[in-house]
Image (cartoon, rainbow, N blue to C red; front, top):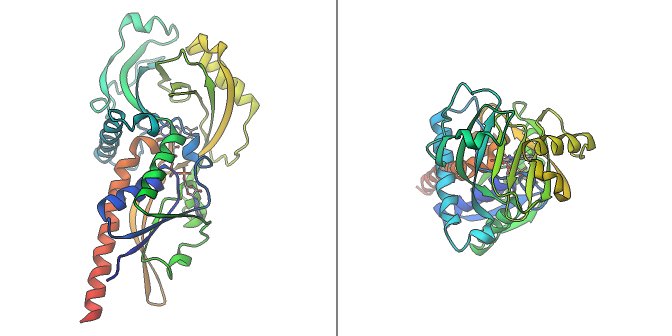
Length: 341
Ligand code: FAD
């Protein structure tokens, strides 16, 4: 069989990293990325990009842990290389603080981040409204630079990228042998997945270069994540809300909540407001499906539904999706050699 023609739909962190994993694993395939939006206009561009996993209730914890470990190891190597600045990847230390001691004092990812430990009394004095805390060092992606870095690596391997809205995956059947669906929240319409829903998130990106440590309230709603150039202040989590317009009331509320954790933020400048829709689901869908019409078959690999934690697990799910693409290639090669007999 000629080199399999693979199309990846979507150019957020999941589509681009999946395309990269496919090229690394199957360099002889012909790969195209099709997307109606590229950076800086994806949900992935809005994200804070912190590697702190969100828990997916429908995905087994050992699987989530493996995805996180894979991603952490991959980005840690980049953070220790000359690529770190261009890729926007850096280590960041800080605190996760709780008003009440959480049921689970050791999250499943505590042995993957670096130096995880309970906060000392002296550290907790900085947070008079909180009674318990965890200190650790993790990684942060500055999202637009990381997406551009991924795109650059893909272009260097010769892959094509086209702006195109895909209305029905079957429309691609005449041009491609395998489709990889990384459409994020777009999968709700593209494949009619009713289990996928948006969780609207509004964040502020501010200039506050003196803030070097991250601070996250354990409720997950209020956070301060310093990046290379800007600090991300969050946030909101609004289930089933599709509205992409910034809400001024939320902007004030986010700013006030963050200032109560870090009062020096009152002097922050150049406040930009961003909104994104987290593609949420009980479990990430990393799965093969065989579409069929009139006896013609089209293998599809889905990789979407990463909700609030896409950056934290992207490399792990991309590798899993690439493995499934490999299974599709093996089936296609098997059927083409049978056809020759
Ligand atoms: P997207 O980035 O939305 O990409 C989907 C792509 O598919 C886009 O290019 C889109 O144009 C394309 N597409 C969709 N439909 C079609 C179609 N029909 N035809 C063609 N193309 C199509 N995660 C973390 O791990 N850490 C964080 O700190 C973090 N912070 C966040 C903060 C906020 C405010 C938000 C909103 C999210 C945050 N996330 C975070 C979550 C993270 O952003 C997502 O999990 C991740 O971006 C999902 O990536 P994706 O590639 O699946 O989706």
